[in-house]
Amino acid sequence: MSDPTRPQQPVSSESAASQHREAAPGAVRVAVVTVSDTRTPETDASGQYLREQLQAAGHQVVGYRVVRDDAVEIRAALVALAREASVVLVTGGTGLSGRDVTVPVVESMLTKALPGFGELFRMLSYAQVGGAAMFSRAVGGLVRGSAVFAMPGSLNAVQTAWTGILKDEIGHVAFEVQRHGQPGGVVPGGNRPQQTVPPAAAALGAAGALGRHSQGEDLTPPRRDRRD
Image (tube, rainbow, N blue to C red; front, side):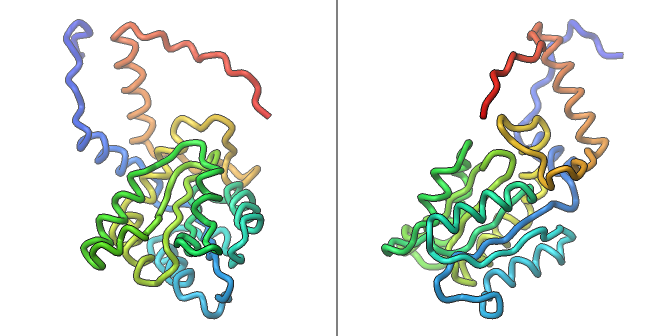
């Protein structure tokens, strides 16, 4: 039995990330939205690529929509799909033209920003297109209980985001979003049961609580005011 008086050994961020990946669900509920005035489901190469890659990786595609470059349509799609999916991937409408409104719509809906997604995407893009990567206004974050990632609509950009970032981290993202719940969030899938928490995830939660208790932290849940 461990000595409770002995100081807890710090856990490196690399070790914690590895443990969280192991605890992450193997199959994630994902939705795909393509924002375009010209594409259709038949000509949407980027959306088709994402759906194929998601299904090949064992994830569940629970929704797919092609909407116009229109703030109302984009918002409506995100609201509806965030109720069904743990992760929503959005392609298109991230440029600088007057019709490109995806980024401001997503940013206006975020409850928690995830700036690392855009930073990593532009880093990867810079290696491919140089300074033109500054036009890549990729953005990510939480919309209530779901993670939303918006990226440029070109097939090359979508492939960069998938292979360089999302492919290996999408399960990790779902785990982080759901393991403690989110203020104002909903369970993806409405009345469907939540994804089963792997044993490793339960162990991580118990170990974290024990560590905080040993340090004298008050674990009494804070009172939450009702939010409409």
